Length: 335
Image 1 (tube, one colour):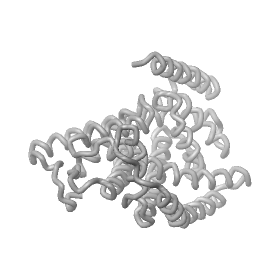
Image 2 (cartoon, helix red, strand yellow):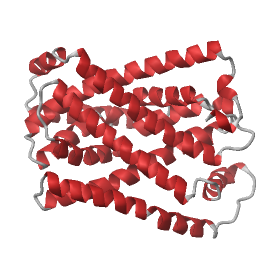
Image 3 (tube, helix red, strand yellow):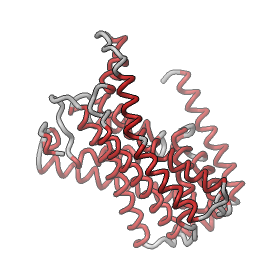
Image 4 (cartoon, helix red, strand yellow):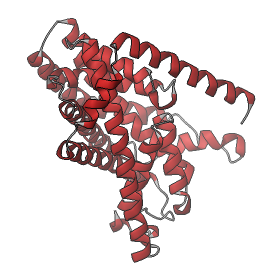
């Protein structure tokens, strides 16, 4: 590790500590009360969180597999669904302490090494997949902004969110056409280490990924994933007996997602917490209540990430024992 990276890591950890202290002070966090709330969570409530988490991971996995199918080489093998799901869940678990994008890309890159084109399929594929989440969240954040600026409520948010989703889907085809037009102005770079990055960009622009039908599918999956995150957030609030209206949570989540993209601290510690409680406060839920939810949500979701990742790893191991080499098949119908 270089000195520069060490300093950046130290600065990131220091910033996280400062933000956490600020969060605890502003939210007037009572750690004893929070512990009591967490201890009172029923198995049924936690099981619901686990199921929603599993669904969210499934949607992320399907997005990645859709991108992978569009641009892998004919000679590359296809990871099984179990393998893909396990890599995604492990990446999310690693995202507890690392920036989510880095953790997910690392897990998938290592996991696809034996399948060929690991850097392209694991790292670049993950960045593309996450990019569609950013695209969808950006439109939903617009709806949240409209709701806040007009001092609206549930009805305003519902209308704005519906219109934003429709707009996001309608904007897909023009965006793909513009990108293809720009791609047509590129020339394939010559071979050589210096041009490796340019070649990767050129391959992306001329791959099947730039397809309006595929892009719309990815946007729909990203919207469904965001909706699942909202449902999971509502469930964590209910698990600790906090009453937060659905529309307020749905309006706040896009801002939390945007904060998560910034990735200034390990796992978004401090930054995401302030963003979550602050966003809820914007829509009428007191910061102190939002802070209680944020803390409980972080603990419950973290535990669910670890449990789902562990279960997925066990299933993957069982699959490899039962069917050695099953995840290395090249056949397209293995998807």
